[in-house]
Length: 246
Image 1 (cartoon, one colour):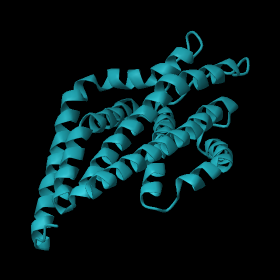
Image 2: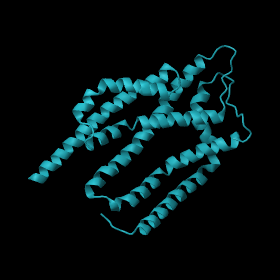
Image 3: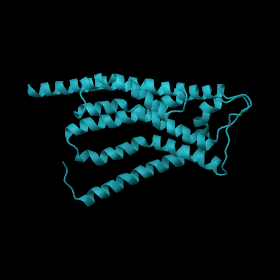
Image 4: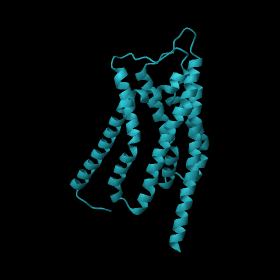
């Protein structure tokens, strides 16, 4: 491993952080002109579920300006994420052994991809169903009009919940690879995982059955995918060890 003075590492870290910040800022500036359209795209699942003639509202004076900017910053962060990850990898890679590099890089890439898939699942699958259900059960005489800032908070919470949920395969592979939990124990824990998935879904999703089921079922399936991935990793590790012994 590379043995360098602490000051050198701190200077390198500062340089990498500056590049991350510059990449994020430049992306944000490019997207700034379309901040209104970007927020409209985020709000589309709810707007399409609202009754005819209904719309979203802004209860704070500055919300029409700042809420689209927050959404644009989020999109800029996601778009500039490859640069951010590259800078992170460039900083930590020199201090890793070759076998650690083979493990860390795929984990970083798979974590990001799974988190994006979780957000996409929430946007394209969960939001239309949940908002359609809530619109359908709205009592007569009640106007369903959501504040744009509160909608953003709700959406970000759901994105985070489903993004983290989709990280389950990575967590399972890590626990198994680190020797904390064996494959046999993971299989034995299936009934507890199913129950735990519904408990977690009940806590982090809105209080309706649809959204809870739409989180709990993928959570269980992702756990099964994690077991399969752990089996494949162990098989590859055993094959490499066998070839090395020859």
